[in-house]
Amino acid sequence: MNNLNSRATRAIVASLSLLAIIAIGIPWVDEYFRLQSEARELRAMDGQFTLVQNNQKRLRELENHINTDLVSHQNRSIDPDKSQQVRSSLIAIIRDAGGRLRSLEISKGRVRPWAIENDDPREESPPQYSDESDYILHTHEIELRIDGSLETVTKILQGIAKQGWYLSTNSMVMMPTEGNLPVVASELRLIVFGLSPKPIEDEDEFARHPRGIRMFY
Image 1 (cartoon, rainbow, N blue to C red):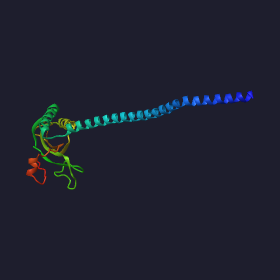
Image 2 (image 1 turned 135 degrees about the horizontal axis):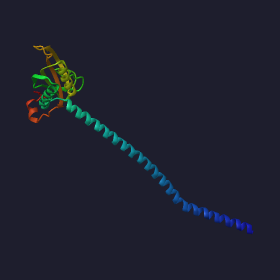
Image 3 (image 1 turned 135 degrees about the vertical axis):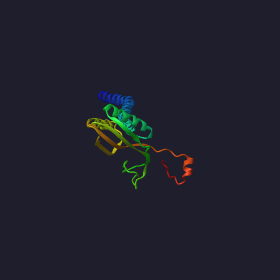
Image 4 (image 1 turned 45 degrees about the horizontal axis):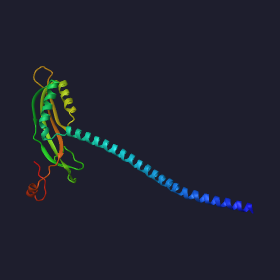
């Protein structure tokens, strides 16, 4: 009988202890799962933050690359505002090479729309079936006459090439000069190009051309 009471007592104590453990442990279990869930969220946020940092770094690299290309384009592009700069550069190149400048003429230039696709700056008109871009093309012809040795003329041509201008050679003629000196007369016809944003038409200009036709001069 005593053994039965003892076993019953132990069973009751064990049950109460288990209930106590469950009652006390449930909040800790809930806390454990909550912390585990927050840890997963933090890991996900950390991954997103790393992704954002990598994207920002990539964007900065692309921005620097675009700015570098833009500066390069601006330096190579020749518009009417740079014609005097081109003249000064050519005179300096000829002087430094030891040549003699006979004449230098730069045309006022032509302007036409620049097409979005398949445009050739050497053509007088944009492609027939291509839409216009938001830029206009400037074309200036340069006529240059110089005297100097073949070595001097070569140095002048190299100096012009180093400028990196958007340029095409229309013609180049070389002929001997009078006298016994190893001097040749050279005549070069060059074409330089430049792109600039298309000017925004105001309302008055649009009213004068009701069909919206852009006029270039």
